[in-house]
Length: 338
Image (cartoon, rainbow, N blue to C red; front, side, top):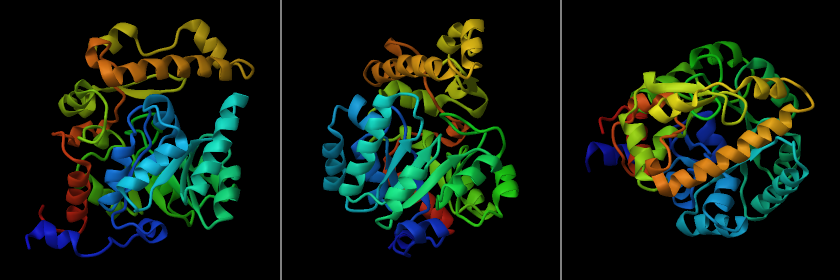
């Protein structure tokens, strides 16, 4: 047996995350719109990490009935999976969908949830009633304390190097300011290679959540232009724009982004700053960006060079299978040369 094979047969990497979730590798494939598809979720879980379902991507982008999508994943793996639920309640229709997604997830055996924004209380109540766990996305201590008041079991610490909606402080600062909270902390942001993965575990994180690294995999169904853009990009190429959702989002600084600009206009800023109109403005931006991102999956840069990604692009040098990524990171954590 070669060294990588020995590493894979060595049993679970022991951290609070692997023990809590019953997984082998403390590695989460974060939920991404529009990138999360059933094959990617299943591949990461089957390899020993855990894939997280993004309900809007599953239904709106990949065209699956939500229950059907979960069952398709179950046909590909019987390992643990998770579901991401965004707790923003700016529209009644979304709140109804959220409750339905939660209900179906529990009925289909999902026992791990990652909540974002808003109060996680509803998900905590329903998940805990059947022995499930809830981790909440946070960027700093004050949000972490509020999430813990809601009963969450762990925290996804989104740092300033993350894709999607980044935080404002570094992973190191998050460990310093939240390490005493008594729950598992998961690093989210800036991890695209196995050396950084091992370093984050060494800092005291119970695991790592990656998104950008898993976009550049064969299972992810985005256009190859997107994957190649991630492989080519370096950390310095990532900029923040508030023209997607009204709050900063990390994207690759392509000529298209430079042309469109990265700052909301004066009217939009005024609407975003008002308590009565900010939700409507964010909804406008979100609908606009969802439509744009959905088209990017099939049309690539023929449509626009508009790629969300985090600073972890620095460590992404090739498109490979999700299993190879998980295996390589696991071998590094076990101290084996892959």
